[in-house]
Length: 414
Image (tube, rainbow, N blue to C red; front, side):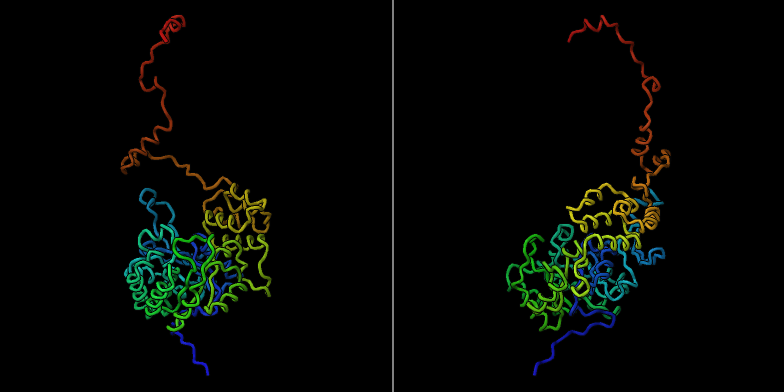
C-alpha cells in the first residue's frame, strides 16, 4: 500500500503548480501580449516580468475600458515640467484572459516593502512569486534576485512575511524561484529552509548564478531538490533548456518534478506550449500575426512590440531587417502583408501618439515659452530656445572692421 503524497494546502483563490507547463518570468518578453500569446497556445500558467517592489508602491490601479485591462500607473518624473505627459504603466494585466493563470513575480530585498507592493496586486492575480534567481545587475545590485541566495535569512524573512500577511487576506499562494548553488549540499540546505516558510511552490533554474543561458542547464541536483520539496508537500517546477510541452513532460517524468517552466523557446515561438496532437510548433509567421493581434488589442508600448518581433522573426528571414526601419504598427502590418490588421494598426498608432505613416512619435510643434521656462528655474532651456534662431553680428551691435585690400592681405606675414 502506497502512502499518500504530502501536499501543502492550496489557498482558495490560489493555484496548484503540479502538472503545469508554464511561461517563465522574462523582462520585456513577459509583458501582457506575450503572456496572452503563451496562453493562446496552451500555457497552463504565465509569470509576469519581475516587478520591483518600490516601482509598484505609490501606483494607482485603474481599469482601462479601451483595452479591457487593469493598469497600475504613476506619474513620470517629467510630469513636473510637463503636466500633459501621460502616466507610465508599471504593470498591466487582462482580468478575463489571465484570470486564475497569472503569477506576479516581485523583485524585493525587504520584507515590509514586499508586503506593501504585493498588497496592491494580490487581489488580481493567482499567486505571488519572489525572484531569487535573476543574476542581472539591475536585480542583484540592491540585494534582490540571485543576491538573495547569499542572504538566506533575508529571503526566508521575505517569504514568511508574505505568507503571514498576503495569504490570509487574499487567499493566494506564495512561491519562490531560485538557482542551484555550487554544491548539492548547499542547495539542499537552502531548499529545506525555503520549503519551511509556508510557500506552496518552488521553481529551480538549473544553472548557477554566474552561468549564462547559452551554457547547458545542469540537472544533477534536480531530483534531490524535488524530493526535498515533496517531503514538505511543496510543488517543484524545473526551468532551464525546456524546449516544448512534450520535452517538458519527459523531463517531469525523468526527474520527478511536478511541472516545468519554458523561457527561451517561448520567447522565440510560443506555440512550443502546444501539444503535438494540437499541431505542435507552428511556422513563425502564424505566431507573429497572432502576437500582433494581441499587442494591438491591448495597445502595447510600440518599443516592446518591436523588440518582441525581433525575437519571433528568425534572423535569416527577409523581413527581419525591414523591421528595424518600421516606426509604427501601420508600417509593420504593411510590410508583413497583414492587410486585415491595417485599420486597427492605424487606430492604435493614433492612440499611442505615433504617426501611422512611419515617422515615429509625433513631434511637439508647440513653441517654447521662454519666459515660463526661466520662471520655472529652467534658464538653460530658455537660453537654448532663444539660441535656436541666432541674430547676425551686426544685429547684435558688433562692429565688423572692413576687409583690407587684396594687396595688403598678400603682404601679411605667414
